[in-house]
Image 1 (spheres, rainbow, N blue to C red):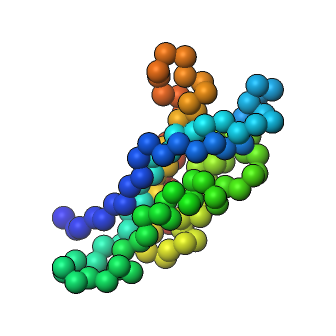
Image 2: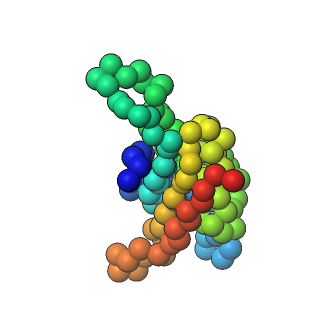
Image 3: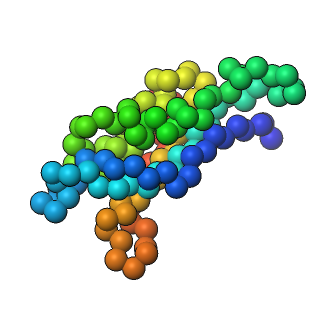
Length: 122
């Protein structure tokens, strides 16, 4: 079995302009992001392996915060699509991205309502 290197961001909450209903539009709503990025693995990570041998973990936060900008996304699927595109553009070593988004404002009893998009490099 081949090695797999997955970088992850879990439970990151960021306000995003999204939605189609009047109570959703006009102001950002909190979304919870969980992201997994599969990178092309190196054959070996020695103790002195340089930092640039991996991806900067903060790039995952950037992709689901500042990179989204002030754009209004009608669907959270479009938000996930933008996150995937951003991560693929940032680093050619990214082979696959999984983005899970939960719309926190929809929760009435602590349930998680949202989507998961997994996309491989095209």
